[in-house]
Image (cartoon, rainbow, N blue to C red; front, side):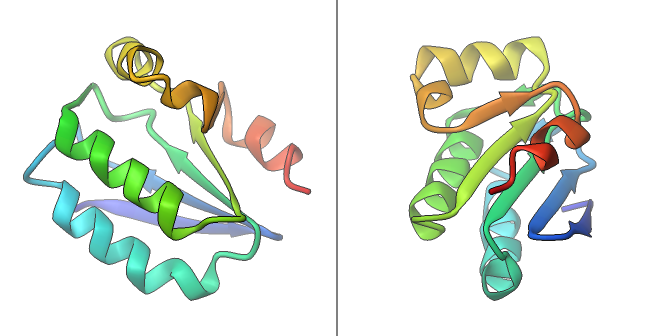
Length: 110
């Protein structure tokens, strides 16, 4: 998985630099979150700007992160149309906030 981690105060931004978030990427995503879990202070921001497609495996990986980081805020940034529709269809948009920019998401960190 190609990604970049950026720490912004109490916020950890994980920018996914992949076109597809699918069964091929989900295991390495889970592994990366496991390694970062102790470093995530109060808010994880998933920057999905580059992700054009997400399948059920990618969605399951994001839901796994939501459960793993119980009590911490999780947000997504700039989900592309197909990803946004998937989040809405599965009602994950009710659990995970969506923002247009990383700065917008970081500003909401409590």
